[in-house]
Image (tube, rainbow, N blue to C red; front, side, top):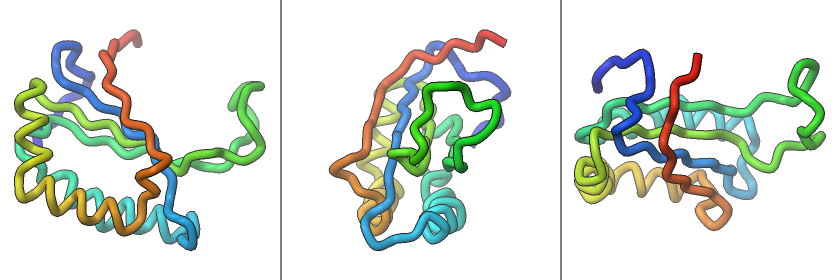
Length: 122
């Protein structure tokens, strides 16, 4: 995985907004996400950057539009050089292992996968 300091505007970027499966505590979810899922995701061929953003309880400084209880548990951002590299990663053996792990702790019926064009402003 390459170390980059800004998001490439011409890459292939996917944002995954995820929720844990029923019966898994937030603490269990966060531990699995960091210690099991992250190492698997980092092995995807062609991956330039992978960032995890687990949620925290809303509080002071978060603005007026947050609900008291968050509907999702984390956001993952995957950046590949291009769409072909991303497609090759998802169908690779590493991608299959990641998908198998995803099914063990993420509610895939409620996740959002959003293709985005990142823009570094500041």
